[in-house]
Image (cartoon, rainbow over the protein chains, first blue to last red):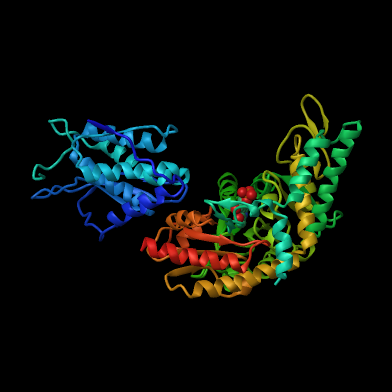
Length: 177
Length: 411
Ligand SMILES: Cc1ncc(COP(=O)(O)O)c(C=O)c1O
């Protein structure tokens, strides 16, 4: 596992928005996905605004498709970007490590200690690792932290409900390079 | 409009307006949540704490007498502010609108209502005027009925007359929606309630700070309000109620100060208002709220209301030029106070709020403690800009320019 720090910006009051806007642009919600046959695993609500993240397990398909866990968001750009990153990252990791990463992201976003470091699993490609670190900028905006944690909380809870396959990893499809 | 020199004078009374937010001049458009405080209110609080912060009543020394006199004067100021004739009505100090409504729910609703009775509400109420009544209904078996809302979130005479009926014991309704600024037809509601012998509770959290109030003229049985929304401190507010009703009601809280005599196994109650003010009250808060009410009376509630109507018209015109903005609430200005709830096409309210913050503009985003109204509009939240006496058309221009800029970024 590599360990990196989030990059702090020169101007701490504005940078988080710029980072988030760029994330939002990259993770702009696409068209509605087909959820037929998917199993609802978990729904988390942000009590302060009513935004929700619902985690589904995709129905078995042939050929199988990634990702297995789908995070459907009714919410703001921060919530969407954050959940979209979680959705991309989690299929790349074994379930236990996915859970650890969820916990680690939550700790870093909620953490009181700005020096909290996020342990980035080595399985993650550079661009995803970068986005994950950018996301941590939200910790500078206390009122928006929950927007970013909602998806990771939902994913963490959903992982606990997802029976591991015999190899101890999140059910994942082997077709992925 | 209150002339620009008056506004400059008014603005200089509010130290927070000299401040900046994110390095920009502050545009404070979150008055629906709470108002800023004039220096005079801070001075009143400071004066009490610095010079005579004794407990009231029963103190036989000068400092306590001074505190008692200031507390009693605070109540008298609230009588003037609300047009209360103390022979006929009383102002109970509470923590604010939420506690005032709970007072009526517990001290009246829980004791008086039964399974045959109906409480009439609307879906536009703030949670604090819904949740206590749900509890009353659950415990007493009374039913809740809701006057239907039109698509734009207003009430119509037919819906009012069809909902308020012979079983209605209470109509509890906001005087002004904290989401849309809509002021419902209070006269029609009162007429229907009276026709069926029902009481009327007005949630005045927004109404009282933006309109001249005369409870004789409003002719409601209960009026709940919060000091912090009318330039006063937080943690203080009040309940106006008709005296005869208060005399018949059981107390809400029990303990010191609200009793006449205490024996080991039973007690008797003090007169109104003390019967409803158990324990040491928020003395400084009451003094501070009275200073705020005095300040507003000096500016003139009529001119504040006029000023806000002019800001509304200006805002309405400015927003009409932005075709990606959806405004919620009544179209007619005569039906709305200075609160605008909106969404920008395809952009979440929180994201708008965060980018406005970056430009020095404070607005509220989310469901504004009014989830049933959000459900009615089929949305989860809005961006809400709400005005007060110190806001200006220039600030509206700034706000609109900020919206344009951020929409460009987010879309
Ligand atoms: C219409 C309305 N009712 C009730 C309340 C609750 O007031 P408080 O929080 O001061 O008790 C508010 C506050 O936003 C309000 O706007």
